[in-house]
Image (cartoon, rainbow, N blue to C red; front, top):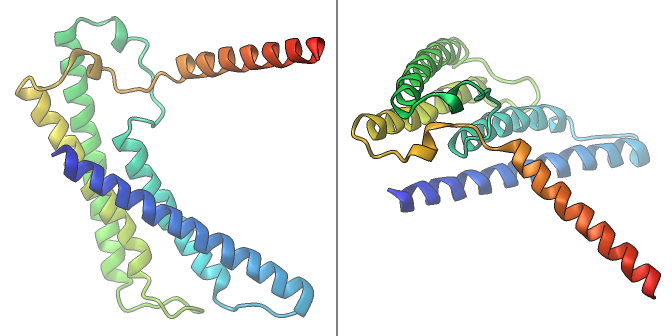
Length: 191
């Protein structure tokens, strides 16, 4: 399972990197063409906008997998492990409900716009609205897998709190920065 997960995560990262690179080339190229040649690529802005939408939604999947979405865990950290599991199951069920709503709305919008096309690229607008379907299905599968792990006691106690420790990471990096600045200052004094 870890091998498949890593493969999917790497594929997701590659797709996001390619989308970002194409966006940068299109936007920068269009700016250069407009500034120097008083012309531009007509479909550049539209394609950049659609790539940005896909990039945002795909990034949400990656952030969800790595537990990097914002959250408040002040109360959850103080609960006993059994209560943490109950709270985790309740939050997973609420997220599944919200993802169902997103999928339902995206499905309806995709069907409505399946024969509509974008003005500049001619691309079906269903391609844009389909992002919600992909995100809701992907995150839903991750949540179902988490629920499976909770119900069959395959989850570690430290995984019961979902948030990344951003404050600890910030303090860790600030301590490294202070040490680097101090070392640089020492070297300047000695040199």
